[in-house]
Image 1 (tube, rainbow, N blue to C red):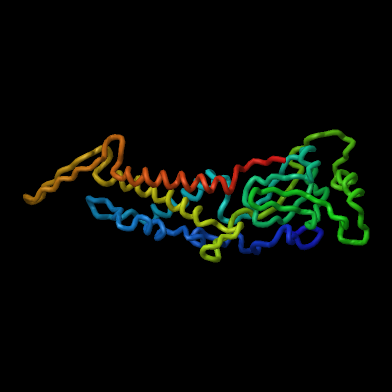
Image 2: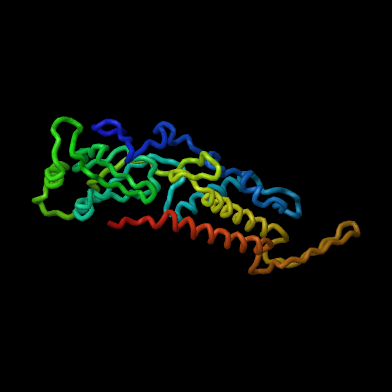
Length: 288
């Protein structure tokens, strides 16, 4: 995946992981486990009161996966690392602002290649020494160096900028302000599991994000459990077996399930966590 100018990684684009390991990361590596959800309803037996049967682990697993997907959409982020290839439209305004590119997914863990294509062919691969990667918002820009190829044909910055359109295959005399899918980028998006308790690096998953996802999964568990307590829309129930009677009265109604109070609290917790995380990750739009 490295470009023709050698190693794609530098202090502007540090290597976060090996490409062969991208698909090896699992939800369990981030602490998204069935036991993590169960520990968050410690003291509350989530069972069918009529049979004593627990919700199956497959139910918990499905709700964890759904909560991760929901959190990614809510915050415009991706969590598990993935290698992506994208084509972006060419706009003269973006191009004149140091070839600004706003990736479709964020955060960016590392960039592998940036080039211009036309007619399915590569016109110009930007040297990695030009890349300026803004990982959290998912932005990439190009700042030409005085040594364009790393060889002996160095140019001053005054010479670089006027010749940049022609160097990249865009003829400045054509006058077109737009070209579809001309910019091509390859990059790894996602996050790494945290390595040190109490210290979260920018490219790692934050503990409040973990908490948000666990609480969203737990909310789904409580919703299902609330339906099982005595049945949907039933507020009280009496049973008599061998002369022994039992009566159950709840606050459940046609509008509220048996776990509604717990769900209301979870909704408040989720809203608070979301507000802080949205402030940190921002909105996935590109502004120049």
